[in-house]
Amino acid sequence: MKILIVAATEAEVLPFFKKIKQIPQNSFQFMDHEFHLLVTSVGMVATAFELGIKLAQENFDLAINVGLAGAFNKSLLLGEVVTVQEEHISELGAQDDAKFQSVFEMGLIDPNCSPYEEGMLHPYVKDVNMRRWGFTQVKAITVNKVHGKESTIERTIKQYDPDIESMEGAAFFYGCRKAKVPSVQLRAISNYVEKRNRDKWEINLALRNLAEALKIMIHKLA
Image (cartoon, rainbow, N blue to C red):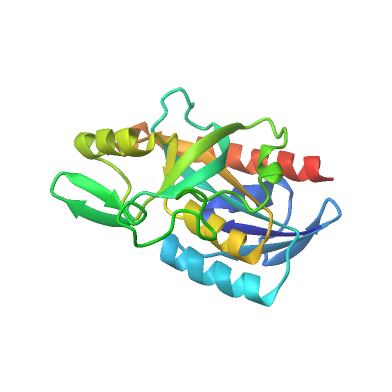
């Protein structure tokens, strides 16, 4: 298989290269697969642009997005690796006093026009994400500003009931669906979504577990 690994930062993929004892590089062979690495930079805009260029230039059998995430769902453990089954762009819309209206509620975008399904984004081939990898399946939102205020966290949970948040996931699913590339999003929980306190975060644990999860997933593709 020809597989594209997409990450926002090098830090999110370096532990994987150490685990498989390879020098970080843009293309490499592992487990009889041909891999290409795309480091996009942080956020939806950068991810959409870099991924769009890459998918326009080359064809891939599978794309895997790897990265960290914050968890709304406190039943998820710090360091746990999950796969995403649906995404919302939670800030795409308008603030009407205390109420937020999505672009779908405003009638600006048909919630069922490609690549959306009822206003949500999914992997292009859902079965890819639903295989028995051994990882918890979650609902996610993608944000430009990670949450850190109790009142906005409560409103977000009420509106979307998300398990996790990231800054790139929706852009990844959007691009892969448009290009018709099967996709999997792997996220490791580095922190809970709450008032910002980095002393409670488990970034190193999350990165180690993310590397191991990616290796497990690749072995299961063999």
